[in-house]
Image (cartoon, rainbow, N blue to C red; front, side, top):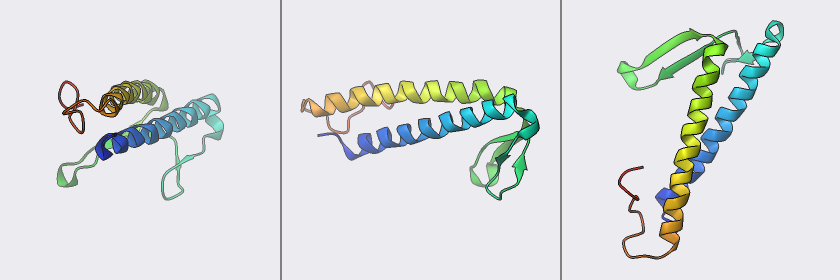
Length: 112
């Protein structure tokens, strides 16, 4: 049986990959049609640049006004990283399904 943790991690990776691929598509379209950029923030305001950050309370960090052209390689690297993690999680799930002793919940080769 696949552990709940592994199943959740796989679902999260798929969700994050889908979100990143949609963002990448939106950014590429915005660059192709720069005059008609219509990427909006959560408040519905048009954004002509992106914001990158790490939300962590008082010690949060943000970079504002990231040009779309710089965002593309960052998003592509994120997608590649998530796909690699997904491959590792799929291997972990196969191991868990094999029913070998100690396979449930134990990461292969340490923390993934």
